[in-house]
Image (tube, rainbow, N blue to C red; front, side):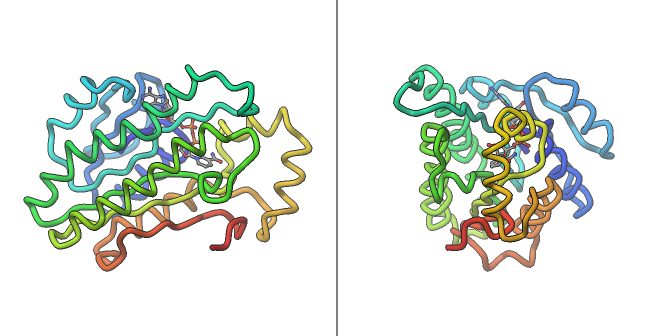
Length: 231
Ligand SMILES: NC(=O)c1ccc[n+]([C@@H]2O[C@H](COP(=O)([O-])OP(=O)(O)OC[C@H]3O[C@@H](n4cnc5c(N)ncnc54)[C@H](O)[C@@H]3O)[C@@H](O)[C@H]2O)c1
């Protein structure tokens, strides 16, 4: 479980633990990581920087049955004046890290005959969003990763799916919207359900996809966004 210290990550940790999973939580070395691990019985907190392939390799030494990839970074800026060094950082965290983790962990899942891969993406990768071009481009790679690996592992009990949050009420999105009041108002008009989503609503979708009942669901993209993107 990556990005375990984020608001969405914490909600996912709690939901999976409620479902009986023993949570291995990873994130940067930040207080939220140890706090969520302390709240969950049997949880283990493993600080790691996922832009480092070496740290990913050592993280993946222990086998896991469920990989939920939540860690991600967004820099919101007009693409035409955007900084390629920031694209590089986003590509490393948003796409290369889940690719490396999948390569390291999915083999063990197929050997054991059961596994779940869930990638947290974003509606902006499906529908586009001004100011989020580079972020969306790096996140959109998760569609190709999840769907193609789904085909490679399907016969061996492993499913692979994507969850696309819309605008979720987290500390990160609150900070972005605080400075962009007009964007917030436009969003509220565009979301049929008329409010921001809750981290727990993303966690509910992830928990379903990780459950035994979702064994016949693979290669899918599920938006959890109050109806913002219907496709
Ligand atoms: N909040 C939203 O509205 C929204 C919408 C669409 C998608 N998402 C996605 O959901 C996920 C969680 O978002 P959030 O809003 O809860 O919080 P967030 O954006 O703060 O979460 C990012 C997480 O990634 C971790 N991280 C950053 N750099 C890292 C690194 N180098 N190595 C390891 N971990 C690192 C952070 O510590 C944090 O826990 C992100 O992938 C984000 O792109 C969020």
